[in-house]
Image (cartoon, rainbow, N blue to C red):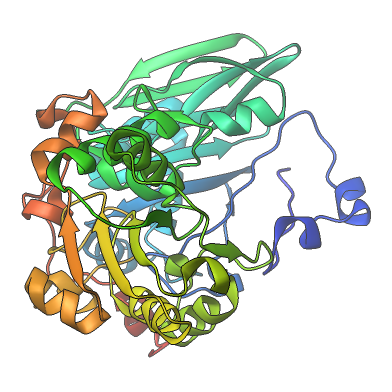
Length: 422
């Protein structure tokens, strides 16, 4: 049987030696959840396990299924009982219903039903399976170990376990890893690729390569292209660590404005954007970064930021710089304004969460408290990737969604159906 352990918190705190001793076997599946559908609760923590017809398997999912609500309603009418309020659980029920045809065919049928973004790993008693949506929204890669294989969302994970990078799991592919070796099944087709640009801008670690791109070099190119769009007479350029670091390096090298680390990061605080509530984000902002007062006082400061989503984080930080006596505070953002919500796995699923959906650049500048504000143009953003524009999902900037969306589907809609009103 597939067994496991789940808890809320950081990985090192949860998986102590006592827990690890109980997790025995030659295969394993792990997941660190970033909530996009369903609240941040233990019941929604992955991997999910199921027992069906004498077999057991577990699933981990990165992404968001845009038709999960409709599928869930249909399955409930047929007698399925759901234990969580996430979109991912529908995959378990769909696969289980076709399991009499074998796991391979069950997953092919499942991929025919689900729509949206998914990079998934499935663990059975005798195989590890990786699958990716036909558009390739989310990254997923394959690595080789001396004694087997590993799949991961980012290549940095392969480096940490000293695995050799083999290739990306292809869009629309089901990749089966077993004692017999590797087996690839092409299960889904799409009219185009739609790699999420925000993975490159923000989510991926800089020491990873995704979609064929080195993340560090991509972000550095963003900064270089910002310098071509916007000249500055600032005394210094600085990032808000860590996500703005690499674009700031590129900007400084291309513009000649000296690079300084004007704020110091508290590394015991996580990434504020991905905190599930605004109150937690506000608290995180206050304790995460501390300015170097003597460096910034009386200086004209240019900040390079990776993105502005809600604007509250930037506003709090700029107030702090004003208080310590910065003469001028300017900001350049290494992507265009986010004007449209994401329905494919990034946690801004409504326009109301996006400051650029209701405010102009000048109004955002005034709200945050800046002397000037500029954004990298979308053409230069695409240029920084070396990926064809038609192979990228830019929906959060241009509102052109590659997969049709259900406007009634939102983060907490399955809570309401399950009776867990938020």
